[in-house]
Image 1 (cartoon, rainbow, N blue to C red):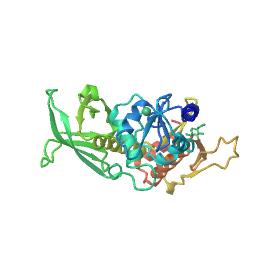
Image 2: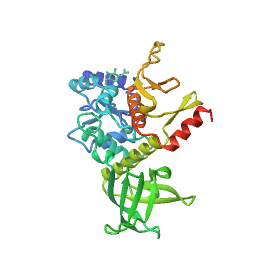
Image 3: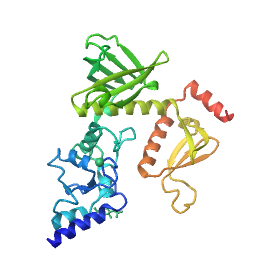
Image 4: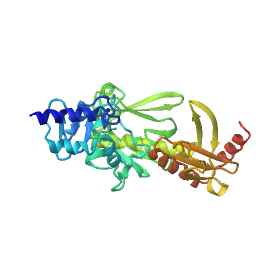
Length: 332
Ligand SMILES: *[C@@H]1O[C@H](CO)[C@@H](O)[C@H](O)[C@H]1NC(C)=O
Ligand SMILES: [Zn+2]
């Protein structure tokens, strides 16, 4: 028994260490549960969701349960950072990472995407619907009476960056065409009265409008939510190919990003000498006039930014872009 007590103490020492001291899935402080099969420390709420995946995750309380030597050893060689390097190896920039305060469906689907579907380990292609040109889904939409829900077809398009919805499959006249420019989506289970309730807000004739929807299947509604985020991010990257240089929250300037054929290019790293590792995750953006070096905190962020820059640089410049470029050069 002394051994088992010692084992709990070892786990309690590990969970106090940085990166282990927040829940591996939602970031809640002071987790006191752990998955012995995945090697992660978890908060009590996320441990409950891990219980729904019994073939993948075995959870135990690090205070109350008994841990055999072999299980502690399995924990000791992993921990939150090691697991993150595997299961969050390539989370797309648009993909929503839930926080402690988020609703259950977001956390549950994050956990399933991470460990059950292994969407971010880099072993396989990302869920196809995030990258598709159009995503169509039938959702329950709250009617004007504010009581009943009706089946409506939603069509998200990357071709013109819009979200449309239709009352019937055969009616090709949409009830609304919403531009990504003014669209925002947020889960609101209480307000909508359904655990998977999603609020879509947009501007119409300068007034803010809301659409309340849900789908019984958590994976479908969360995938749709992330597909909206993916489309919106791509829209923003295309429409605003400029980057604000922030340092200590002071805006230092705006850089226009043109295309390769106009002598813009982006590369990883920096030619500047390393100042105590400060230039570890650098990105160099070459413009016709000068070089800009940006720092990212993490390698993943660095890769996502490079990818985003490259996308912009490959685009042909529009007349609007030429005007912006000229304005920025004049210091406007
Ligand atoms: C977190 O826990 C793991 C074992 O689960 C351990 O290997 C790692 O060193 C801990 N992290 C820190 C920063 O001590
Ligand atoms: Zn958690």
